[in-house]
Length: 203
Image (cartoon, rainbow, N blue to C red; front, side):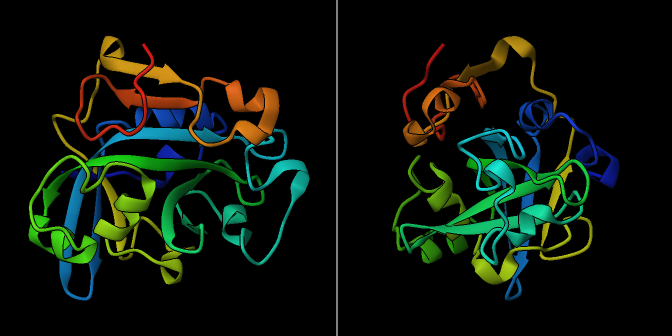
């Protein structure tokens, strides 16, 4: 496997990056335990202008400060007080574009993932949806702002990472209806037919 380098994240098209992250492998090394999974669903969030983004209109608080980091950093936020959501920061420092990792297909450390999520058997709910992704990978708020090139969270590519265009589905994002017209933008990408993809599959 080959680790994604800074230049992958340091681009101004977060929508393209969200699409290209499909098929890549996210790896965590936490508390001596290695877990990994192939990314099968993402959502793009555009800096400043996207009403669905935490950075809309330049909003900047202690909670979303890591969105403003240099590209190639993690941004983890807590949803409903319990779900740890993994985002990858892109573009330039102080331009808070980000990609939410909505689902992965487990590869390594499945027993560890089962233990972390309180599940007994492997099924498609293990890493289906961003809350389950964060829990299975062992992530929490302390892992926000981490450098994806040198740290507990890394992203790799291998010979299976290139996903053909006709295998990629596109839809509106999930759970951002309050963003009005922006909530309808086709910024969600997923690998068609993958059982770990969350929500309704829109072709």
